[in-house]
Image (cartoon, rainbow, N blue to C red):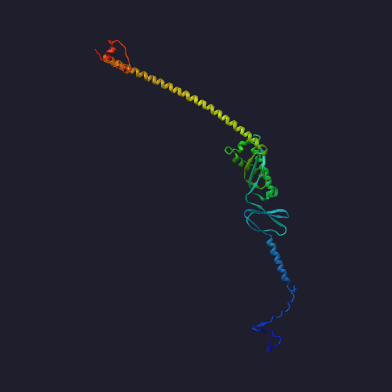
Length: 326
């Protein structure tokens, strides 16, 4: 320690010549007097709780939803215009109902067709809420509304399919599913509107049609038997038609051949008559030459290399053959 420095100086120098300052002792703080600042504290608390109440009672309405405001459990209004809204604190509550289209998978059910066959029908429906107040008043919740819609769909589908045969339902070429779906949709909407459920079905579609497991094999066996019987009928009809066509073709062929033979005979007769006429004309012009020509023609047909002719030497035929023309 430097003797020149007064005792108690807070500045000291270490062995390297650096000066260190001693820490000053902190003076004790005076306790806060809440009595002096109670107004500021009260105002801050009031502002804080006011902001908290305002923020917790503001709600936002989106484009694809309805916001239902209830007061003591009763619906006082329905907000459907998008924007920021405000409810009365503590006594009002807000719930949400979808405005967009929703898909509901209808429970699979068994029905009877007109030809007394049981089939399983699996449908789905596309629907949406059109009147939230009516929906809440008559259905209460979305789940209850879907339940009522499902009951109507099953009832209408059972009635409509009960008027069709099984083949008309499952056959894609002759199926009436397209018009059936439209009919079911229209009829279900009529029932929902009558009971004022505040919902609308956009479309009802049939996803799948199956046979019950206990009837499937029996139906398949009967269908195979029916198809075999139908195929046999087609074969029988084909054979009968084949025999009919063959008989018709044979009859027409015989008629054509007979006509051709008749025409050939007429032509041949005309030719022979014309040849005879030519022969007669030639014979009348030079009978001797004609007789000689006929004799020579007979020689070419009767006389060969090994032909032996026995006849009198003075016969005309022998004279011509020997070259004696006198």
